[in-house]
Image (cartoon, rainbow, N blue to C red; front, side, top):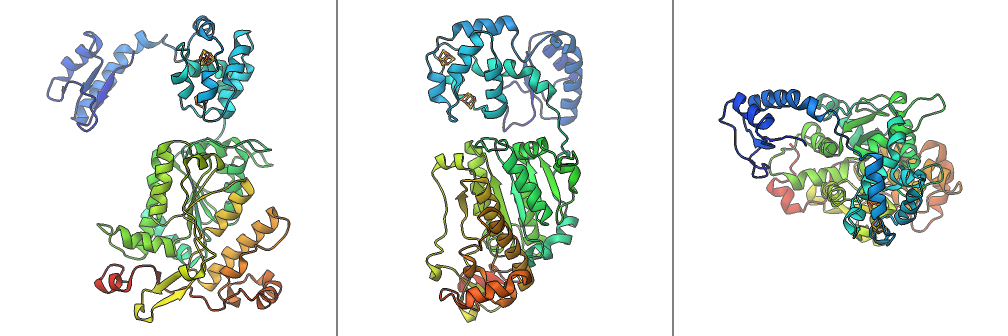
Length: 470
Ligand code: SF4
Ligand code: SF4
């Protein structure tokens, strides 16, 4: 029913190459002679052919509906024999068969809610059905009216973060004065939550933006935070600025715009620290791991693509927090904070001085949070970096302590002693109490390394030039 124009020889699906043919001939073949797909590598020609073909087939496509009619739905439902194969195949354990049974009796409510609130659109139920019932189509039809009424305000996806913005925030991020960048990306396989399954994401974005973290979002996460409003009826995009700066909430675009988020720490290394980009992955990842307070959150990661993206981030030195449902992937990268001897860096400026002990920050590279509260606290904690200045560490610890207090019974984090290098790291409002606690704690090691140019590159690598400060 649709016409396809491939524009790259890399993905052309074996379509006939019409790049050298006349536009009139291509249009005629596609409209009149049943040619459904072509490859055209000349982009000027693509533009003209696409517009002319779309105009020519508009009338014939007007009545085509993406969802089936009531009659077609009835036929599909008649084919359902309530075997339960769909239930067994669903990664979210949804009660599809029961909802189909009610739909057979004319009640589509359950099926609609399944689609709107829980289904992630993976299509496994369709594949599993022995009677070829297009279950997703039935669900879409059941939810059609509700979907049409769904309205929310979202700031348009803005694409990459500009170099000029990076110049403004590079220093405060590396020093720790902007406490961190939270990149919220990935699918919508969220666990249920008492105030709705989207609420934890909204709470994270809002609470951290209020605390001057920079929030960057893409895809489902960018859309889902827009469903909720504050007490003044504003969505998060109306409440916070869209600038890439402290307290900004930035929609970068669809989930393929994740590269714009991972581009941020790379640009910081390139623009702020003047590191070369070509063939320099190791040095840049080392820089990000040790100096750029950033964390990726994928609360509903379910696809292989989402998990690959998470791994792409952690390879770059950005720790990633995944939601509980993602734990089915079974791969985490947890730090051993119980082994303090593993947590060491060198100072790039003085590699000859050997290794220094540091706090375990970031503690993990891939971590599964089990609750929204843990997600919030861990997001603040995983932004801690060895390069934080005293002022920066104070700011980060303020948020870590505040959030821990708020969500875990008004107590101090039990691992606080690991992250305080010296008295000036402790937020002033907590200083007296925390210092008293630490002085009495035999586990506290004063004077851990911090600030400066921390690196985990070897002395040889630093000497040879990799990681050399220019
Ligand atoms: S797998 Fe198909 S036939 Fe079996 S219960 Fe589900 S929809 Fe019905
Ligand atoms: S498409 Fe939805 S209902 Fe079907 S298996 Fe996937 S999550 Fe379950």
